[in-house]
Image (cartoon, rainbow, N blue to C red):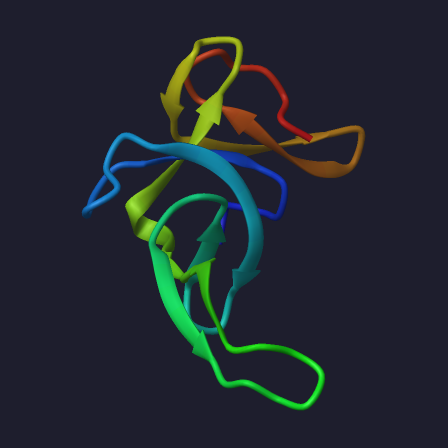
Length: 101
């Protein structure tokens, strides 16, 4: 999976198409990512002795194929490539050609 935690991504398919947000967590085994403010789901929490009942809105996972890395230099979504620099494998933006991490 080319998307990592804390990357800024753009949703390219689904009900939240066009939204941008940062990746909160990745689920590599299922090829899914959780993006801030995208795929909001409603969870109902029962009342307990210490807390009242409430309705929580939280982000749900979406497939990693439905998001693209957002390149801040090119100000658009871009694909990610890899190249070796100084013996280390680094991610590279296909649009701007700059090293991501």
